[in-house]
Length: 284
Image 1 (cartoon, rainbow, N blue to C red):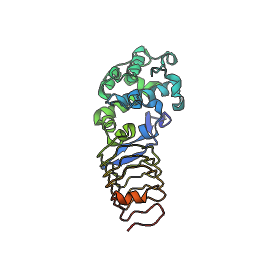
Image 2: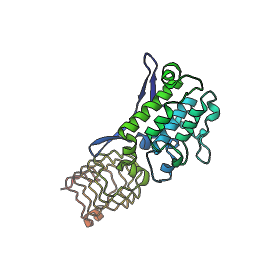
Image 3: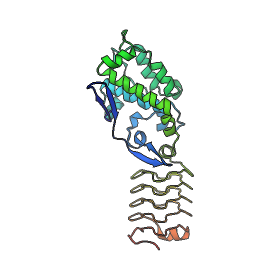
Image 4: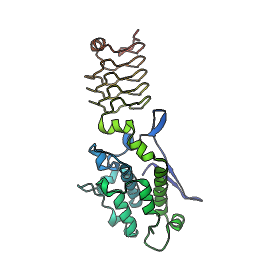
């Protein structure tokens, strides 16, 4: 919620700010929801490394809308969540139409099977609802009600974007999200990805393309990087203790300060040509 700005002067405008991006397979993919997001905004299936669907990001959107409507800070979202991962917000919004309350409940249902299946379905269900429990239609509501109008407009714009461009599903199924949620991404194409200071211990990345990746300070303890392409990657200060690097390509990589076992590297036939070694020297 703190990354959403609302301009109420003139026509209502809603802005999303402070996004981080990683270049993945030639395209920009937002990593905000996983890399920088709060745990409370993740759907239960993501926290337990279960299968993600198009309904998974609807949960995050629903939580954001509830925080905006109730004035709950992102750091205090746990005050609304019970032990069964249900979001208890209804008592805080007595003036809202029960239909809209039901819509929000369905957006944040703990079981993804009980949510709307996708953004298009959620948007279709939202449009006819009189949000503040009177005869004001949604179009008029967006022009007349403060601050609820900003929240409804944000929901509408978010759902339109997700349903029309499939951004939500593309991110859910992206290699980056797969790696960050499950720790497994064998053979994935992740050139130039920013994974600085991430915890990837025991990650399964054999055969992955991580050329040019920023892995500075990343924990790769016992990670499987057999046959991985790490050419030109920044591994300064990375924890490579116990990492499996058989046949990996580290040509031109920055390994300054990384705890790479040089003897093992030679046995494993790792390509280190042009790499900056842990002691600062350049391997020939």
